[in-house]
Length: 337
Figure 1: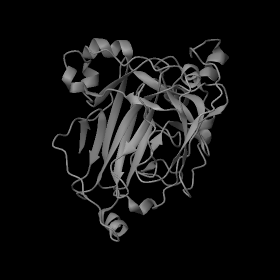
Figure 2: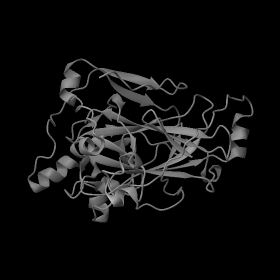
Figure 3: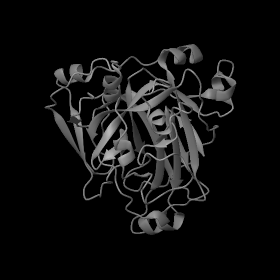
Figure 4: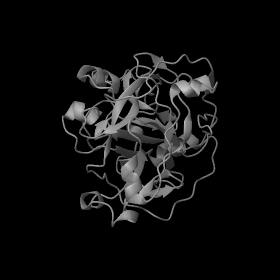
């Protein structure tokens, strides 16, 4: 069961365990410079608004409605990161697959059903607190940056050669109930309730759709599965496809103004505001995808074609970095813009 609550996607599996629950939120953030350097984690500047496509049935193209799902707005060349939650120390573990344009953000492979462990094509929650982009090297990702479908910048277009899907695709698998019980037996936690409303899932596609492209390089580890492939309940899963609409399309479809553009990395840094670094303890990091490593970033592809797709792409010197540690739920990157 998936519900949309306060601009968050809540995944619940009451048929597996009353505590089986996790959440995914979509955070507005700085677009880090796409200059070949490596940057720390930028802040979260508040959630992107999420809406049910069905609520705007009279304005949505039929091929969008046929697949249902949710929609959110992004400006061209805007960045985002995905935040994961769903409890404290006793949070129910889940395996989450994240793709853009049906290309896995961890391996670079085309979308397929189920989980793969060699190579690992999922992140483990809550051990992975967030995902900012494509896993290209051990300890390095390339930031998710929204670009118009058909312009050639998206990972989907560079790997598959098509501009068909766009958006983001998410599939969540809960841990097997017996594994969770064994994990929690020494110290039982408080269980979570279930939500009342389930919504349709799908990816809306069309001329107004946006795809995700690789941006600047960021220091972030994608953690290896500490439980092993047999921990996950493959008989129960929920899948959600999220359409990313351009800011102009969002206004015409929903009647709402999209969020304002975030400040530039240069302006933010000059204001003396913090960036972040996260230490995941002894967790092992994945090596990164050779296929994703070969994909050109927005700036690299623009330079190759003689275009300037990224405004305000000047390098910055980051001095104020707040170190975050793996201490329960004390992993806050969100700030008031």
